[in-house]
Image (cartoon, rainbow over all chains, first blue to last red):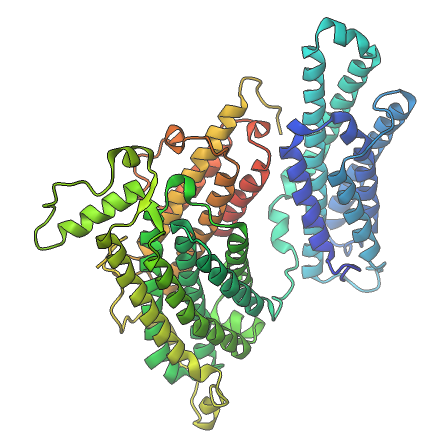
Length: 488
Length: 126
């Protein structure tokens, strides 16, 4: 059931899990007192959520396990109550700010508890998949407490080290109670962590395999492709670096692999016309893949080690492409079969989305070529030198040049340098192959958007293509690259 | 979870993150060179390699973002004998193993995202 802001119980728990992991990693910057002030509320919210979980159907072995988990949570809550009482009785940690991220965890857990409907499992048995999802939620919740407790403990340890490192004068100004209470709180939180860890050891991450996976959002891939197209064009129209072009080529190659995987499933299931896929689209997609992979293999060599990081917007857009495609193509065990894809995804709609993506790829390939022509585009001195020497060696006279391709000082520091003509021309040829590959694929995919794209299959009485798997491996057009990182 | 040792420094953490960035980039490059080979792997394997390579590129980018501009990458070469050969997944595993060589709090702030990205990548492809 979705929360007011749209997140499901699983998403709220996952967010909490990620937040406590961040807290744990950033404890060197945190104040143990601030964390201990908020920790009690986290445990209380977790206990409330635990109580709100529906009880599993009583069957052999299950109720004993359930009771033992209930007892464990009660123990944890008691330990937490004792710690909080002790804190309230003493001036340490005192009043003050709480930790923002732990407060967000509290809010998440409270919202999650509000989402859970009350249900009686004695009158309506819980389905096995619901029971598996419940186990996963419990494992995730206990993991939040386990990791969070460790973060609080690390922060308290750091406080103790800071107290020890104080000069004698400054140490005298600190109330003697502080050190004692910090040690006590640290030891109690450590015991709490161990107890939570006993549950985590038996359930995490295996229980997560039963976690309910919501169906893919139908519009996510279309949105991801549109955003990617915009960000890639923006990056190329600015002052692109070799790292930026490398990421664009790599992501385009991934889009081509994704397109072929999904369109092959569409062909195999009859969602798109199998004959046109086999004879025109599959070979064109393979050619496009090969040309993008060729570019993606070469450009990273020209990205200096310090300049390989593309802009965050482009990285985020590429990341969303990967996430959106994984959501559709992967099931829990790996690449989903054609049958699973056909049952879970509207392959006809997806094929139209992919057709739009393939159509815009050609324009992106042209933009990439224009960037390659830009005289201000620089490459890593070492990469430029290696590539220029390799290209020269393949020429009629071999490595006959007596001058080096880059200055030794630039090579030593791997500075960005201008691209020599021999390198730029080879990169242009590779970009030309990407343009041709993208154009051919876009042309071959055009029928997917037409009114007769799939309907033609029905009209002609064509059946799903049983050879789709085999034909997808056929390479009807020559690959753009002839080996790892080679330019022709 | 156990408490960390007391002997590591922030510089160790930076060196680890630098090494992780290099290993992940090597993994991404390796994925691409396998995909560029002739004959190309089958479609399932190609998609998996492309996905792993893209994931490794993102994680490498995250790791590099944690390094101060002054850090010389040449000073933090990890002990990878031939990053241009071998299994890219093993390179990602090596990067994850490298993060365990220092206590987690020795890593620079934001290191959590890199560790989580590495674990996710291994979970997806392991």
